[in-house]
Length: 185
View 1 (cartoon, rainbow, N blue to C red):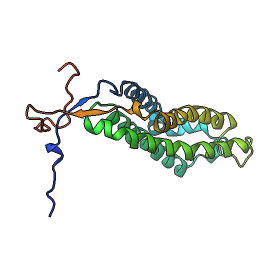
View 2: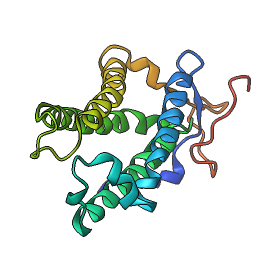
View 3: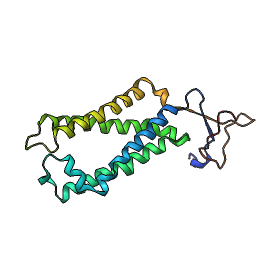
View 4: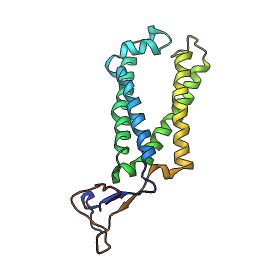
């Protein structure tokens, strides 16, 4: 029977000086900060939706609830995943690829939805105005292209780590799970 392994027993890691992930860490912080702009969707939903919806008569308790749920997912879920990935710890570095895959898939679904709304040309059937649909597409395409570039062309930007070795050549483990030592040490 295989032994169970505790995450606390993982060896300490140091960032790889060649690929320390500084570019992606900055991108994660920037996107996390931008996601905070959706807080009004949670805190002042009726006012925010009045700018986004094509017809304010469509505002009802269900649309307000779903807007709040969407805002909560963006602020609570996506932003926290980005902040976790911005750390130079074992977990942070290992979470960057799945985080970018998750966000990229979300954008891959949202862009066509907004494109369909744009094609409705502001008719009564359109849920949002042409301006909101176009602005949404313009805001989603550059990060989507960046993610595809990082994931498919330059995965080295995500960063790497090296497990610290002791004087005996074996990986060190201790109570400092995921601790990053500076490159100079």
